[in-house]
Image (cartoon, rainbow, N blue to C red; front, side, top):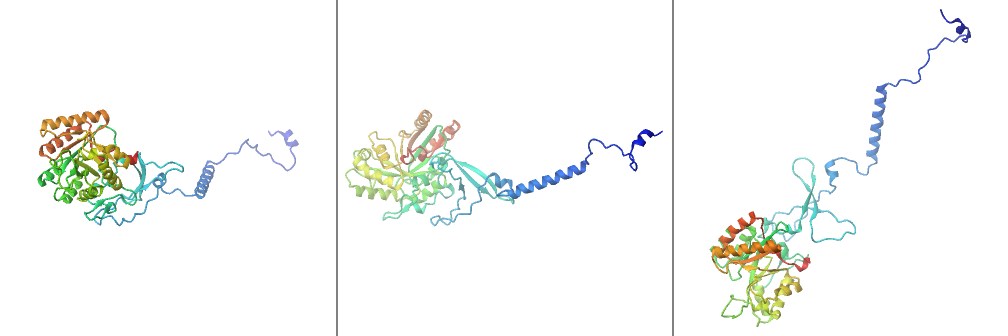
Length: 399
């Protein structure tokens, strides 16, 4: 029975309505749709407000744009392949430019069918040098025409033959041994054997009196060798002991000596420096040696002293004239015997482990070439790095 008391108290014309719950129930499907709409609107707004909309993550990671191919310089031979184009990362504002230390280089690769991919290459400056594929081709910007023939010269941009024709090396600071084998081009068969047998890290020195030097230079450079030119300097007891024609002497005028020096320098191209052939008397005379060393500095060449004379003033003059300088530690084949040569080479290794590097000087005798070739292979296994002569030079220009 209905509650009549309550019906009497209810206003006329109003029926009893069910009591509402405390909270209205929300449809889940409507909530999900609303959130999706809000998310789309938010993301679209963020993209629209970006200065550079996000498109390709591989291009945003490294923002270096793909550089346009640089035109080949006029001095590059037609047969030489164009070097890869790289864009060097710009230094921060106010940061000093450094000539040494690793450099970070941004490059764009074009492998595959997809878009170009950015990558980073870290390059140590000590590994830089002429591309071995074109190492036998002279850089025309580093050549001066003369009556005697082509002479090495600094480029208008400051590049030196010492840097451009240097053989690349690792740049590591472990035990290093540099070996120079001289007398190439004197014997055709001996020169051919030396180029073929000696490891590419061994530096070769050409005698200016030799034949077909240009051809042998190209063969040596194509095989990876760094090369230097030998220059005949006056020894004691000259002319009874005679280095050959066009020898520089202490009694000659500076002009005459420079003429003879130019003759030796013009015999070929693509070398990093010169090395004395004999010259104990000449290298001890600062008056005679001064103009000679100044000329090397002017032309961007190194000087390799074979270390045979304790009275040589070459080191001090090289520092004064900005000439990269190398002094030999020992003559490895003063006695032409395999066992004795091996002892000298082992001594070089000990010196290198003690002070970081050592320099050995030898000649292109068959026994020397064969012994050096076999020793180098074993020394590498013991952790010795064989480096070109430029790698151990003291370079005043680099501090």
